[in-house]
Length: 113
Image (cartoon, rainbow, N blue to C red; front, side, top):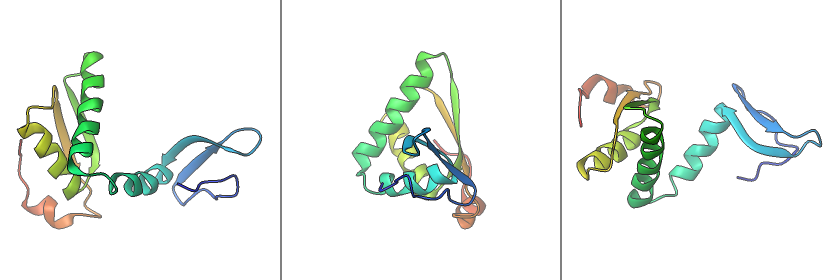
């Protein structure tokens, strides 16, 4: 992602750094979201579904029956729907639409999957 010791924290986020100033790999809040978007948009549908499957499998192993995505976009919902249609979600997933990104989707989308 090109993050270095000189990369400033974005507004609303933190890039954690070790005592020597080098990033330690943990991105919090806005730092995570901006970089995760760059990574996820580079994936194809199969890779996105595989990530969803791996995450929901992990939650299921710990006994969780439901998870939530508190900042879903239209593309996120599409991946969740694809995974659900393929029977790849071992738990329920609730997606709350990010109204700052997909306000129209929030108005028109009902319960699905």
